[in-house]
Amino acid sequence: MEEVTLDRDDIAALSSDARITILKLLDTRTMTMSELAEGLGLAKSTVHEHLAILTDADLVTHANARKWRDYTLTKRGRRVLHPGKDHRIIFLFGTSLATVTAGALLVASFLRGFAVQGGNVVRDPFLLCAGEVFLGATIVLWYLALRCRRRTTPTPG
Image (cartoon, rainbow, N blue to C red; front, side, top):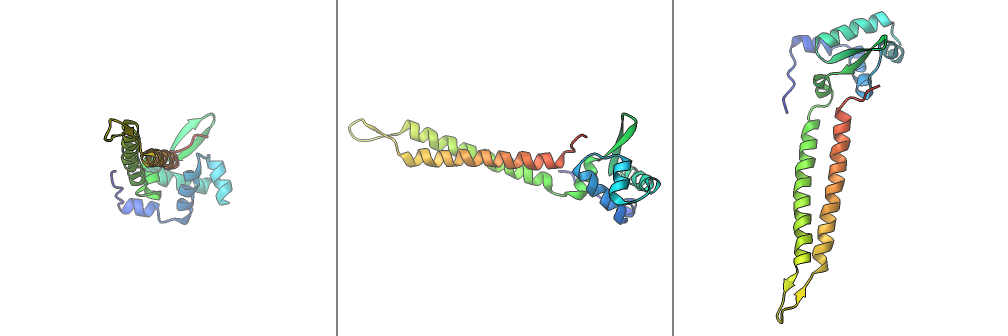
């Protein structure tokens, strides 16, 4: 993950409580200037000035949809608000790779069984149960990783 470096202009852009509130509001969903002005209790002209500063700092971007501009956080803006979130996703997927491997090996060991004297094959049910637990943990880890991923991407509308 690339680091977000802040210079003097970025710190100046983040030095306003109203601009920080705008970033937090846009972290929940895409909004128009009217929605932001209403949520902040400020005039549209004041919100427009704050949005211009945030846009110049590459923290906010806008798209012309219909006749209104929809404002959303940029990737850089999300990283300023949520530093290190990408690391959590990488950790969850890495851990899930280990659990799915362990689960598959345990289930395969159960299916293969152990040869004992006399040519009989014995299957230990503990291996099957442990494999199922590891495979279930994999599903939980994937679910958590996808939830983290959804929170870091903007939602349209």
